[in-house]
Length: 223
Image (cartoon, rainbow, N blue to C red; front, side, top):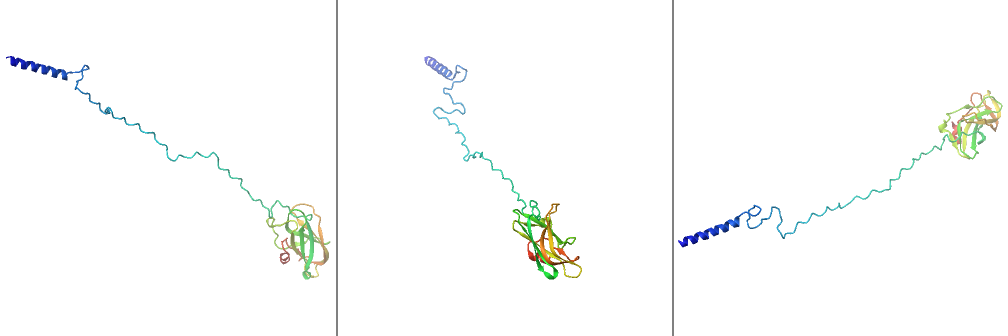
């Protein structure tokens, strides 16, 4: 009988110990005897993962824009007309000297020559205006006269030439001993006629003529 009682007392003591060990904790949670780490928590003693380093700047930064602006292009240069330009006035008798030389006696052909004696350039325009001594009228124009664009530009000391044809002795004309010359200026500029001696020049009323100013004697006598 005593043995059975003893066993019952031991069993009751074991049961009471077990219940106290598995009983709720003061806050109502079951005490398992050890605290399990929460999910994702690092166990104690493990060093924390260092924060990611800052992003490095790009390896080739853009250079700062230059403060100097590109130089603006200079003004375009427009070449002004110099040859035969309108900035050069027509030659008048005040700008030139004048000579007349016999070139062919049978046709009473004379070579007329003017030379720029002024200190500036001038333009010899068209045909010379030639009159025969005391005869009325003037020599007819022969050959195509250069236009203003093609007028001869004469620098100081340069010359221009024209060919004067009096005509063959046919009994219809007259002989004169001098001629007078003025220049075409395309204006009403008053000029002093330049004279030259032409002994025995025979002037035919239908043949006499003068060429335009050219830059050489050969062309002046062949037009």
